[in-house]
Amino acid sequence: MSVLVTGGAGYIGSHMVLELLAQGEQVVVLDDLSTGFRWAVDPRATFIEGDVADGHSVERLLHEHRVESIIHFAAKIVVPDSVADPLRYYLANTVKTRALLEAAVRAGVKHFVFSSTAAVYGNPPVNPVSEDVVPNPMSPYGRSKLMSEWMLADTAFAHPLSYVVLRYFNVAGADPEGRTGQSTPDATHLIKVAVQTALGQRPKLNVFGTDYETRDGTCVRDYIQVSDLVAAHTCALRHLRGGGESLTLNCGYGQGYSVLDVIESVKRVSGVDFAVEYVDRRAGDPAKIVAQADRIRRQLNWIPQFDDLDTIVRQALTWERGLLEKRVA
Image (tube, rainbow, N blue to C red):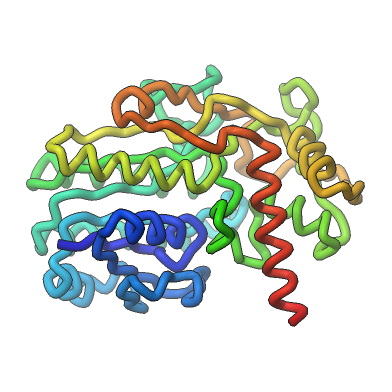
């Protein structure tokens, strides 16, 4: 039996592949390489370039590789882009997930771990926000993911498929061993952008909005280190294999940092006082969203190892320096 990782050539997916291989799993990666990188996939995994929406091909590979479990990362993730081009996001995140689910049902896949997002909550009325809060997404990105959650729940009700939905808060950092990290040059993740600015790859860092109802006027987010997030997926898979019920869980630390907090951390860790420019808000950005994360610790026995902003920034900085050296060489 094997595990299929969709989007396994991407940021989080490549970390997931490494973790599964370390545990002795047989891993199959399906990625269209639209944003991922072939070199990021560990050669011990079976790599297939393709689209999760190609139902016949996906069903065939599920049978051929005796896939028992799917961990589904493949998606579009940039909130402002989803506001500008919503149909692209509904196609990538909702329509294609529906096709993958149909192939999974036809092939008899038993377990499904779904990469969702805190964006399903929108601008929550309370923080930290628990899984019991009624979702109210404020962007097509969040809505596209919530629709996929609904489809997954309905599919599991009608078929012998169990699932765990993991609602990510802001993922950051890199593999502590330096094997993989966030590699997209034009990524919009704040820590990635701040680190690139500190290294001189960008002339300045834009801060989008300073008039939010937060303690310093900038957006507040819960930053979760990528290896800790991957460990949550491992716990979810173990839970499902042990006969556990389907679950929807937050993935965060329960600690919020503002944009200015992050900038201060990157300047402190890098030793570089880079340029910052304050500009208007971006569409679709909530003021503050922090996870209430006790449920995942309790129900999956998830124990994070890297809950420290400076540590996360240091990992991102080390990874970015490595990427820069490769480009220069």
